[in-house]
Every structure is written in C-alpha cells, then in structure tokens.
Picture 1 (cartoon, chains in turn blue, brown):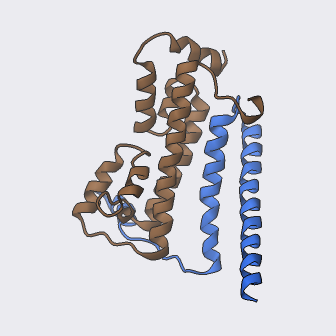
Picture 2 (cartoon, helix red, strand yellow; picture 1 turned 45 degrees about the horizontal axis):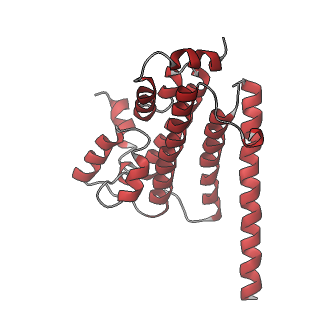
Picture 3 (cartoon, chains in turn green, yellow; picture 1 turned 135 degrees about the vertical axis):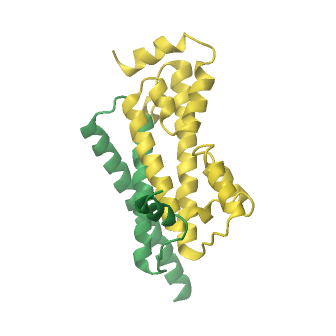
Length: 83
Length: 140
C-alpha cells in the first residue's frame, strides 16, 4: 500500500474537528443538496442537465428557506416565553 | 427510444428481473436504475449517495458505523449497501473513537444516505415492475 492510500485511509479513522458555533449550521447544506438531487432524480420524467439543475436548486432553496422560517418561528416563540 | 419504453421491454423478460433490480439497487446505489436503462438517474443517485456517505465517514470517522452500540442508526446505514457490514465489523473489533458534533454529523449523513438509497430502491423496483415512473403529486 503506497503512502497516498494509507493517508486516505487514515483520514477515515479519526473524526475531523467541528466547533459548536453558528458556523456549524453550514453542515446542513451538503445534506440538503443531496436530498434535493436524489429526490429530483427519482421524480423527474426526463433527466436533462438544465432542467435537473434548475429543479434541484429550486428544491434546495425551498428546503433551506422553510427551515429558516421554522428557525425564526421557534426563536420568536422562545423569545416570547423568556422575555 | 425513451427510458419508459426500454424498461417496459425488459419488464416482460424474466421473473427475476424485479428482485434482481432491488438487489442491485441495494448492493450499489444507482445500479438498479442502470439495470432498467435509466442511466442518468443511476449515475446521479450513485454520485449523490456515495458523496454523502463518504463525507459522513470523513467527518465522523468509521466509528459512526457501530452495529453493537448504535443498532437503529446501523439499520439505516446498512441500507446504503450490504458492504457497510464490513466497516461495521472493523469498527466493532477496532478501537475507533468519535464524540460530539463530528459524530452526530457523521451519523446523520451516513444514515440519511441509507434512507435515500431505500427511496431509490423502491423507485427502481416500481419502474421495473410497472414500466413507468411513479406519478408526481400534481399527476395524482
């Protein structure tokens, strides 16, 4: 096994560092993008690059937007209780 | 020839066609769609699910796959492929540690990859069995 293969395998045996700060919410983006792509890949009648990218992006944006709206709603709810 | 017509032609060939599609779709994400000649779908599914799963392993390490301590998560993870059992065996016998946020992110990524593959397996089986795509919500 060469050095590069060993280095690649080693990177899967120890976790990376993720801080518990607001920036860690960005880890939400890859999973939402993959969900949008896979869902559209199973739903679209014909897979054309332009329409697929357009539809997936729209779904991705919708997921993020509604999660943001829910987050704001929960924040306001907590704020009303606490204040 | 459209994807629809091709899959319908294959549909009448063999009784093992549908189970084989399901098995292949589980073995390698997207392979079921490749078998029923939905090449583009298969490639997208393979790329997306593999990316999410490998990213999950990279973030949380292989310790996120643990068939002994995290049985429910493991049930979702193994839906990605039965080959995940090999990683599970390595994790159980090795001393791999992962805690906190990276563990959570890795576990969620790998489990969602498995659940997405379940969606794709069902989709591939539906197409193989009926010869057409599932109806979209507005078609129903």
